[in-house]
Image 1 (spheres, rainbow, N blue to C red):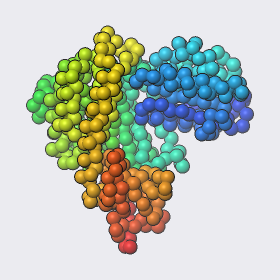
Image 2 (cartoon, rainbow, N blue to C red):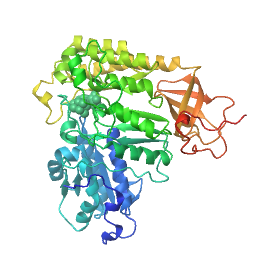
Image 3 (cartoon, rainbow, N blue to C red):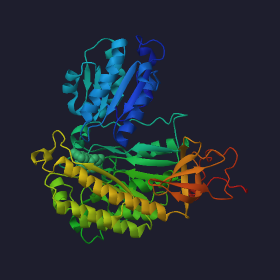
Image 4 (tube, rainbow, N blue to C red):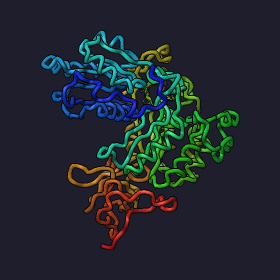
Length: 513
Ligand code: 5AD
Ligand code: SF4
């Protein structure tokens, strides 16, 4: 087990420790699944580049192909098999090609998969990314398939993002915790990612600072239940509202028991890195949407006015069987409280349809909840059995066609809600952060909530906060034009750093038309 608390590039083996690798080996990284996996892939890339690898897009040009897998929903293994089969053909023509499998599939079923797919050279669990250099070295030396899937329970390790020039965009993810202590009965995550471990607040603050200094304008904090965060070093001051509960449906005792320090972390980030323009987080667990977190939303202008809060079902009976630990009324009262603290805040959610025992009435209750909350973003899934999960003991008794029909029905409703919401924005002015260029030379950015906005801009809008007038609403996005009179100053492609706390919401220099 690697015991370093935080691994920096300095602690990785130097390039000269790899005598067998001839000049600049190349890697391709294929990522499946969630933002957490994408974030892990970014760290994997940094470790590889740190030992002299270069990235190539095509597996055919690579010396190493790494598949970063996801197992949250079904068909993960089929997907992996077909990928390994495809890349295995390349390996037949080029036997030195190394194939590695990382992520949740490796963690969960490494031994079995390695036996079934002999093309695989090594397996790497999500907590073992820092060991990649030594594993590659052993593979180079001809070791049999290496399987490193050990949770770093004693000394949790969080790889620091490197903020490499040229790779830093306008937005970035920062991991603040890993694992999950919930036991939602359908979910494989507690088994693939292990128990909750938290990153020290000072490391998080240092990473946000580094990223912002490198040009990042928006940070999304990542964690499986991101708002259960606690600082292991106990360095955060108590946040306003801690220990208070003004909810009606949530039992006061339950609310007061909540030990989360997430609101304190949000406040510390906004105070210590005031140049950060936007702060998001994903995904919160509804039971940790505390009073104190609502106050943080009220007080921190950098906090985006959008929250993705998975609800999973609108039926109390199903929520109980899922072991979600809240009721529909509790969920809705937290949404309502946040809406009154932050007018205009929007919500997106995840829902599973066809959970074992879900009746027509249960599903109707989920539709009713969607109607009540009017989510502006919606991710719906049909239930599928996952290995090791408690729900395996329940009969998967909703027929697949029925699950699909329910999914289509709820998509129809939530698609309508989203379209109505987007339509309501036509004619308004929104502040958009330019993220990247689209195919036709236009820019794509996101509003303060989370709407995708396309717009034309004469200068380089990437990394800029721009006021735009919404002209048209599509099914999933908006078209806008930069407000007349707003022109990017020449060379202002990234606002100069450290404008001071009062300038947090400052826009780039405006010059007349
Ligand atoms: N079946 C279907 N959907 C699932 N999810 C998690 N586990 C399952 C499962 N066994 C969904 C949940 C979760 C999202 C990431 O994936 O909605 O929030
Ligand atoms: Fe899975 Fe529930 Fe943990 Fe989310 S909170 S990762 S659904 S066990």
